[in-house]
Image: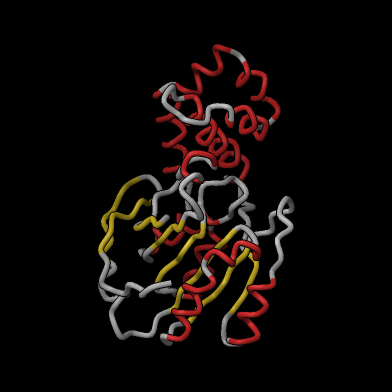
Length: 238
């Protein structure tokens, strides 16, 4: 896993409606025992960062694992169970899924933002867009298949509107309260560019609270095959 970087960090936070620079110096300091929240789509994904988590624990840091419930994945949670047996102090929980009045709006606009990147002429995997648009609300699917619709979704004005909606949408109130109670020193999302991953709203809420955020992408191909970044973190690793 290599060494774990725990230097001071200052980053540009992306908050709802505006961009505000938030200094996190003081949260991440060498020698300080810290708390990390790791979020991933399902427990099977834990194998990608098992060694990192073990390194953090042996260095004296606290870890809270949060998993989504992706019904399409059937990977074993054996690695998670082995970790919990060896380190019973590690916390494990289920990810909160957005349920407020913004959910329907964000579900639709986020899928549109994912879809439109496959319409770029330079994209190496445009065929993935065909599968992506099937996740649209049914009312938009006929439009997305038409020549006019493709031009519309690829247009810069629509892209700006979709980005504006994301910026205007507040952080999920349930996740905000949870993060305030947990008060982690950093929130780490393991892959963040898939619609079934709940981490987008965790990153959004953590940015709002000034908590350092990290996205770790499982592999390079995910950057072109899984969609796009909906909310920017402080740091990205691949």
